Image (cartoon, rainbow, N blue to C red; front, side, top):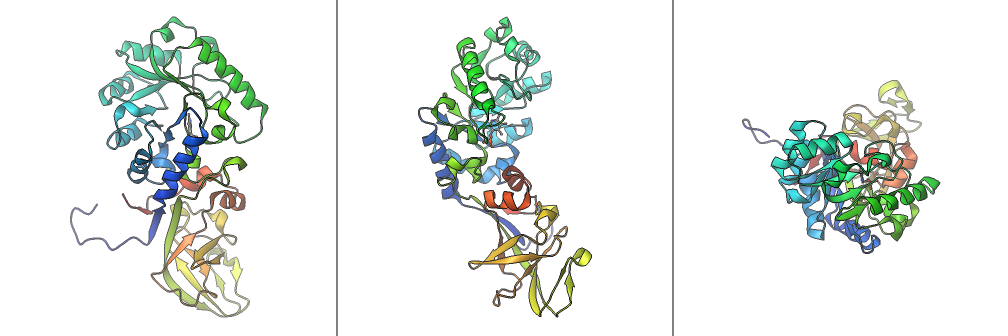
Length: 352
Ligand SMILES: *Cc1c(COP(=O)(O)O)cnc(C)c1O
């Protein structure tokens, strides 16, 4: 925001979101959820895509159930969608957070017996209950689900979270069996276990509500999803300088690339401060008019140098796409698909 001063020129770094792909991914995951409905994990600003832009697209596609992590994210989401459909995964760790949930009208996800009692003491109301079936991160231990305080809750969604759904792990079957015991013991309006990868594990894992995040935004956590999930996030950086190199010239910090012939290079306005981390150095590509242009040398904080030798018409001000096909990018960089999305920094212009 510029309360004073001249209007800003357009950003040299932007994140394009394919709205049709985002809506299509939700429909695919909702369809794969069978009789269950798909909700959406929208924490971390919709995994970096921008909630202000992505949530209305998901709502228009038919999504009604929203999962955020922090209370601050709940406030932001409640400006876009009805508060009653928002669940806050981190749970109320003090009385102020319990009171805030009631004031805003969102559902806390209660993660311990202490949180259950805190919610009841605050006056209660519709809530979600997370039960731990083996991840040992958040959630009520199985041994405590029979506590009388739990029976006093008005549970909208009783949930648990899979630790290894992206692998063919025995832990999935174990957690499923434990969750079935939870369903039999804890009265709730709905039950929910599967994240994106869990949806691909099959109908047994879907219960009443699924909670995809990554796959909505174009991530492919399991091969079963590879053909039906489409890329959503297209980061793009502008060329801010073009230079000609002579044989023997090196580029960038520590001179890790040296030209063996005369070549034309471009400097683009993205660097590790934007989440384009140094793991792309010397091995990433950028996209221009159907060509893949190599990243040369080290990625710096605000800039990256790319080979424009075969892109003769590309000049200052032109936009190059970062190669963000997520499964391939993750394999190349050793970053997870989640990290690739959520690392994209604040300097990316996200339209609303
Ligand atoms: C983040 C999260 C999800 C979404 O997981 P993905 O792997 O991104 O689909 C679902 N449930 C809970 C509890 C989460 O924390």
